[in-house]
Length: 449
Image (tube, rainbow, N blue to C red; front, side, top):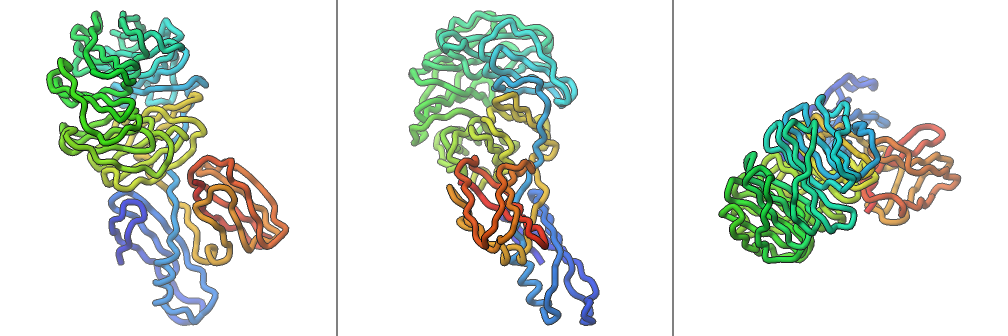
């Protein structure tokens, strides 16, 4: 028997385990296991029988309606050693990586994030983006605290030392990209586009045709590049920045990040949306998100599989090129700002308050399930909920709300059969509702809008 996966909407085989009935009726269904062969989603459970007249047909029907699963994603917090806001992350191989952020902070790891060592930047400015053209040669751009001066730093020795380069920019610099070790681009506020052809010794201004802030730059080859920014603007060049042409995106919202998987397929993320192109920017399709917060950064392993980071700390993943999104795990209490993968399944995320997260399996999931019996016995509504969650059949119960990391968010005791719980202060995302009665413990799942 095949079932439709609740994550990727593809069919995979359902495994059933049989056992001998205690009522002398021969074999009966005892356990079920579901492993999606496409997205690694998994779920399993056991049957509990209360009536020896239940038929096999009814058990199969029971099975089909009782699989209610929620993804608990495997993003592990790492110790950054700082509480500064972290803005960008870049790796030169599977072990060696760099993180930059506020206060002129530069961190380096040589063991895949197990430990992070501070490096001297020579500045206290806000460092916004880091890019390595080779394993030894890297660049950082940023801004002073007032946003009146663009900062550029360069290393020749794998981040051991960093030297300041004259940018000549009177605005913040927010993003940097190099097509080789000598030719690079930096963009920022006031429509700023800077270009170097000599490894950063000299930076010259290019005409953007706008005064909007430009937040992200990405090149698909030596000549063809894209820049995204405020007002829904996306600029494109096909001659290495000699000319930049505004593309028709059809929106006026801010765009904060760009990523291309090949010469034709690209994505731009911004104000609760993602744009997608499959024709090198000639047309863009709006892909609405499942979160109302800004998309701070995006990364795509291929045209179908991608990740989006949100200002409210949510991580989302798509398996079908942005048509559907799955919230992996809203474990962060602060903005998540940048994402980088060193392998298809090994990636890093950085965010405010010193957050660094790592996954070894593409953020894939283990399963938390609830049985049909639990669903029938304990009733919660509405779900999703915005302000007040109503819980029925919970007389003399201890009720606890947990996030997907297992941390307790709220706890109340119920003396009545029905209780209302204020959840308005919770951040948007998915939560577990642990209900402990005098006889047993139930776990329910709800979504906070």
